[in-house]
Image (cartoon, rainbow, N blue to C red; front, top):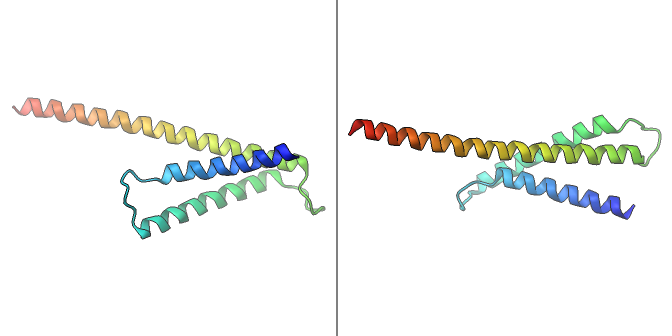
Length: 115
């Protein structure tokens, strides 16, 4: 039971870190409006995830407590979402790097052709 609580806290912390990293801008100065928008985006993502995992995992409303099967399902749902989000973010960064390198190479080539 203690291990499950620790795992839940870790999953929640990791989810929050992933969302914050995904929404963190490159420049260090963030306006208040941007902070509010980032927080809204985080809440929307968190609520969608919560709703989806709840719908997929919780089926028995005849008791007040969460059954072990439902709890494990919700944790797995959250972990899969976090891993998927991290992978998408990583692939996006890789794509951006390649796109930037291609744009620089094209600019250099165009610059050398103009000379």
